[in-house]
Length: 269
Image (tube, rainbow, N blue to C red; front, side, top):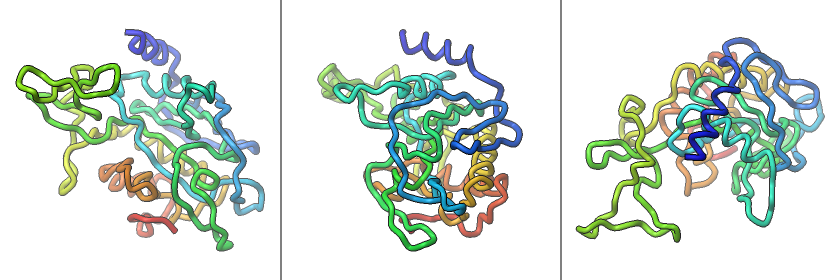
């Protein structure tokens, strides 16, 4: 119930969707209609340098948030990482999260690193190797990820009901019990041929992503071959941002003025 209240409050405070050009300030913050700043202390310095030889990212890594993703969820996530207690909080952050409605919440300036990918490296134009967290902008997309069809409804990860210890709950027939709190609306399900069923990405979210990427490219001179990384390209335990987003990146690239023919198709540079 508390989560629902927080989500409703986030919706009430939400801006209009991003539908026009954005710019990046000299200290790495997005500016423009539809952008909200909720600064997070969960950051550290970049080791990479932008084309103007100042600290800056050399590419982008896309993620999905997971979760049921009711309206307001992206804002709740951004608020959650606006503080950090190393004794109880998971060491995770991102530069920004884009909601399904096209709202953009920025937590970390682009000229700092965020804690969005625990493994992996990437090379810059000078041939220097950097850890992903210290060189790529981490963008979270509000999305439930892979879905499962159970007992006539669609569920998001972890699909099954768990007890307080994290163990799956079994029913009278000793089978796992789907968690009703993880139900996703049927109309959100989309099939990625050969990959399974996933939560879809609405047009406002795709449009906002295009404007965000365009602003990053204009400010930091990011090359097309380093703007299409997915989290799963680096961490094989992950599959976000998934095959649907891989396909939609063609549209995002076009909106950002990038050549989609050179999209990253897996692995890292």
